[in-house]
Length: 175
Image (cartoon, rainbow, N blue to C red):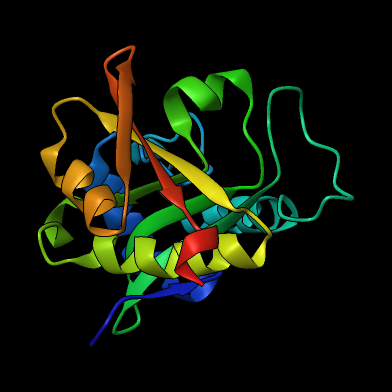
């Protein structure tokens, strides 16, 4: 089966909880979840967060200062949650340096299977639908797997800042 992007949904709660525990409190890029450790991995936490994630794509929704409207997607394969992906509609100064338009993370037990590459390919189409002509992606200097994922999807390295590689992908030329 192939990874697909789906909206966050409680029907994936069991595999989501397993994934949060696998991450072990480390950053889960693209998750839209903050201060989430394995101790917070519960159906109750997820039930409270899913509506918040879904409403953040609506530009009528007021967001806290420093936050931007974003579309949150989950990578799912065979009805199992395998990762997170977020498409940010615009960049703040911080996102321009460190986060970019698209962030993603694949659960540790599912890495190395092409899930991130496939999910990013799908996300670029969605970013184009949002009207973005060019997107920024970043990854930590030592994260060669993520760098390869970005490069396989047309990422052109611009520079490194604060220990992060910065890539741009031109969406206008891929129509």
